[in-house]
Each structure stands twice: as structure tokens, then as C-alpha cells.
Image (cartoon, rainbow, N blue to C red):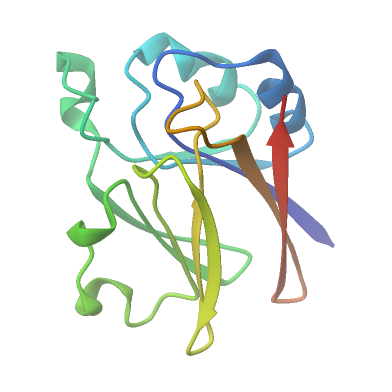
Length: 152
């Protein structure tokens, strides 16, 4: 069985319809912070399992309960999720298969020492001249594949 995971970050108050359309095909959604408005999480909550961390712009009272670092498993793949990568120590990710972070608004993926490091970029507003991006990960029999999605 293949599991699809939608991975987004830095929505900054804007959940684009095309992002939501992609997320509808996913059973799990990961948001790496800087949501800025709690009601943006509502449409994602009804789509599947939602994993969210607090970003540096998530300063309102509703965000106080969000963690800065989250550890979880999907299909026996071990994830560490944070907004700002410098919040994660080597102890936090030593057992992780995937480390996901946001904040820079730039898509970045790299395999290092058997671990995937992934920043899905920003799927809210374009910043710093970067593309508006997100990612979809597929997990099948413990194997990962990742697709970068560039939105218009």
C-alpha cells in the first residue's frame, strides 16, 4: 500500500486552492509552521492526519499549544518536524529517517547519511523571488519518494 503525504510550510495566512487540491489526495498532511491564522488548519484537519509545529510568526494565543519540535511515525518512517532547523539538535534527529523544516521559504531536499532533509518551501505568498512550492511524499514498503510541486 502506498501512503501519500502532503508537506507544506509558511502559508502565512494564505491557503491557496491549488494547495488544498493537492492535499485532498493525501492521507497525511505535514505543516512546518508559520500558519499565522488558526482557521487555515480547519480544511486540512478534515482531510486526514495533520502534523503541525509552531513557526516564529505563529504568535497568537491559539498557537501556544503547538510544539516547536514534533516526533512521529508514518508507515514506520520516523519523522522530526520543526519550523526553524536550528531548533533541532543531533539528539533530536539521531533516530529520524526524515527531518522536515520550513522558515527559509526556499525548497531544499538532500539525502545525508541515509536521512532525508526537506524544506518544502513556502506555499503561501512568494518571497525573496522564490517559487511557491510544496512537496508530496509517497511511502511504500518503507521506501520514500518525494515530488517537488511548483505552484503558479
